[in-house]
Image (tube, rainbow, N blue to C red; front, side, top):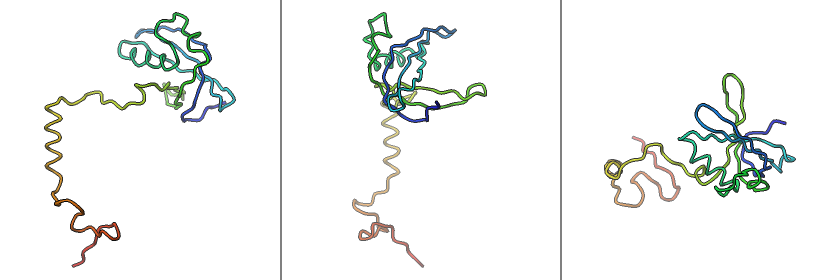
Length: 152
């Protein structure tokens, strides 16, 4: 059964597989989707140095306490929110299953502004805002809520 792209409530089955790659360990977590007659999907977590904090957060969202050696038993039966999408990989369509956690719900820029850059940025955009003296701009019809058009 093909799982449509979207967001689902899922339950961890407790089936966890360990893998290895050149970049670090991998962990596959099986998840059942009750709304789809318990169809199972798998989320693969990567543990390269860059990905490790995100993957640990996803395991914790599944109920792992960060201590248990038996990860499968510690996550079994726990509910989690997931997202399913498809993407092309080496000419084949692959399902990607994302476990949502606190890190997945927040938007973060890869490169953030320093305090001085932020101050300069705010000063720049504030200088671009026209001073209308408050209220509506001159060409705004307050009764209709639309801009007036001027002919002439």
